[in-house]
Structures are given as C-alpha cells and as structure tokens.
Image 1 (cartoon, helix red, strand yellow):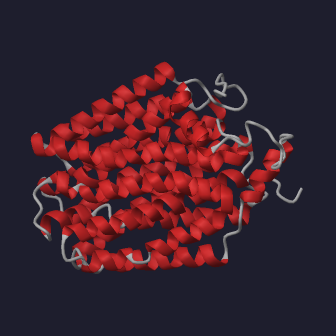
Image 2 (cartoon, one colour):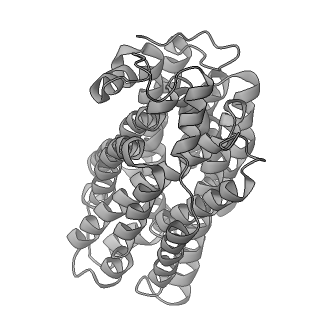
Image 3 (tube, rainbow, N blue to C red):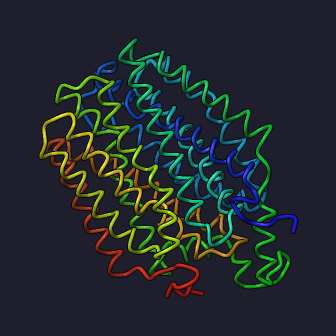
Amino acid sequence: MPYAQGIRANLPQFLLQVVTVFAVGLTMGAERTIVPIMGEELFGIGSVLIIGSFVVSFGIVKAILNLYAGKWADMYGRRPVLIAGWLVALPIPFILMYAPNWWWVAAGNVLLGVNQGVAWSMSMVSKIELAKPSERGLAVGIDEAFGYTGVAVGAWLTGVIASAYSLRPEPFYLLLLVIIVGTLIALFFIEETLPYARAEAASENDAPDAQSSEANLPFWTIVKRATYRDRTLFAAAQAGHVENFVDTLVWIAFPLFLVAQGLDPAQVGVVVGAHSAAYFLQIYTGRLGDQIGRKPPIVAGMLLAGAGVLGMTFVDSYGAWIALSALSGVGMALHYPNLISVASDAAHPLWRSTGLGVYRLWRDLGYAVGAVFIGLTVDAASLEIAFVATALVMFASGGYVAWRMEETHPEFGTHAPVK
C-alpha cells in the first residue's frame, strides 16, 4: 500500500516532523523569558494589561490562523501551508532586536501568531496522518512533547544569553538561526501527507470523491459541530480555551512575579522552562490516552495544573518555584494531547485538519482572553491574585469536563458524533 500509515513505516518523515515542531517551539520559547522583562525594563511599562497586549495579538492571530490553516491544508496540502508559516516568521527577530517602542513588539507577535498557528498545526496534522489510528494519541503526544521541549529550551537559552549579555539584541540571534533552519527543512525535506488522509478515507470505504454527507460537510457546518452542537466537543473546546490561561500566566506573569522576588533572567528562564519541559511527558500521556481513554487524563490534568499554579503563591524559594512550575506543566501534559485526540477522534479523515483547526481556534483564543483576564486582575489586585484566579478557573473547567464530556476513544468510547 503506497500510503500505509504507521510511525515505524514512515519513520524518516515522522522524525523530520518532530524536528520541525521542536523548531516551532524554540521560536515561541525565545520570547517566553525576555519579552515581558523588556516591556518593564526597556520600555518602562507598568501595566500588566499593556504588557500582555503582545500575547493578545499573538493569541487572536494564532487562533484565526489555526482555523483557516486547517481549511487551506485540506484544500491545497500540508506542505505549502507549512512553508508559508516559516516564511512569515523571518522578520520577527529583527522586529524584536530593533523595536523602538512596545507596540512594535505587539505587532511582531502578530507574525509569531501566524507562524505558530500555521507551522505547528501542519506539523501536528502530518504526524497524525503518518501514524495509525491506534497510534494517534502517541503521535500527538510526541508532537506536543517535542514542541514544548523546544519552548523550554528557547526560554532557558534566551534567559542565559540575556544574563550574559543584554536583553537585546543577542538573545534574538538564536531566534533568527532557528527560523532559517526551520524554513530550509520545510523547503527541501518535508513531504506532503494529504495523500495519507485520502488513503485512510478510502480504506474506510469512503473514497475522496464519494458523495458521503459525512465526508463532504461544508466548512461552517464543521465549525458549528466542533464548537457547540456536540456537547463533548464543546467540553473539549472550553477546556482547551481555559488551559491556555495557564500558558499565558507562565508567559506574562511568571517572569514579572519572579523578578519581583529577586530572581535574575537566567533563574527566571529555569523556572519558566521547567513548566514547558514537563510537557515532554506527553510522549507518555498521549499514549496513556490510547490505553485508558481520553477523559481521565484530561480531568486529572486540569486539576493538577491548577494546583501547581495555586501553589506558586504559597512558597518563597527558588527550588519550590521550580518544582511547582514543573507540577503545573505535568498537569498540562496530561490533558493537552488528549484534548487534541478528542477533536481528532470525532473528525472524518477528509476534514480532520479543518476540525482540529476549529478546536485550536477556541483553544488559542484562550491566550488573548487569558492575557486580558490576567492583566486586569493584576492591575486591579495583584500578581498573586491572578495566580489564584487562574487556578480557580482551571478547577471549574476540569469539573465541567468530568460532567459533560463523553469518551471518544475509537475502540471503547461512548461518544457518537452529532450529525
């Protein structure tokens, strides 16, 4: 069979996609430690809501691009969209190096949102298509594990470089190198995986040209189904949306909170990096979802991530902050790949990319909403209250998943898609 699925059968291309998502993560991580500190120390911004504006611009653009990148990928293929995502990222390092004011940084993050929404989406979809359906959770787990390991490494390295030199331009030389390498890999080594999705559809006796109502759903019908018509997918969408409040807290509030406690940029990079490094466990937690189902790891992860965030406000030592940051990352690792698997399980192969794009739309709008929520909370109360509020929202979201989500596992799930 020319397009046989399986990680082992497609190992060279699968590994190239792993390298790609690691580079995408490095691109995002390069901003995790440095940019919030730049806002406070270089541009003299005292409002966390204004500092968070660069995450708002990132989140809105990434969310929209997630949706349309999925649609474009189903129409034109995964590889052309991936290449476009890398090309858009090329100006980002220069903007961060030479931005004359904070609003240039926020505008530069629009391009980062495009890059992340497009390049990460395409790498993830391609891994799912190269893998067997029984390996779907593992494929997603590997994707997210290596992507967020890249985020952790990028956050740590830029913190070290900034401590040794300055906040800019030196840390962003690394960012430029990563973007160039990612672009070259996409141009010369990545192969198209859309034929694998078509072969999977054909193997299910639903050939690409068949007039199946399920295979040929209109774009907006898919959007409505994945947003609110299906209670399980709604539960997944709201959980994905809220989970990014934690990621936004790590991005904006962790550096400001830790600097206020007397840590230097290198130490901040370690604490922030510990959170993202724990995402490497997704190699295991994604596979766990293949073995026991998606719902148990999702519920446990939402509660554990909230507990880690809440605990940050009750300790006052460097080691404890590292441990609790990592604990919240373990919680994220539990639910993150399994929420993606829920959206993938419920999608037909011929519109899987679009369906995943809808889920990622609502998930990544959580960056924008979370940045406003956290910024307003800090400006009105304190950094510590923002940590507590984020934890409470996570607990509530996890409770809703426990109440409303049905299991979607292909073999023993109880979920029947809404027609």
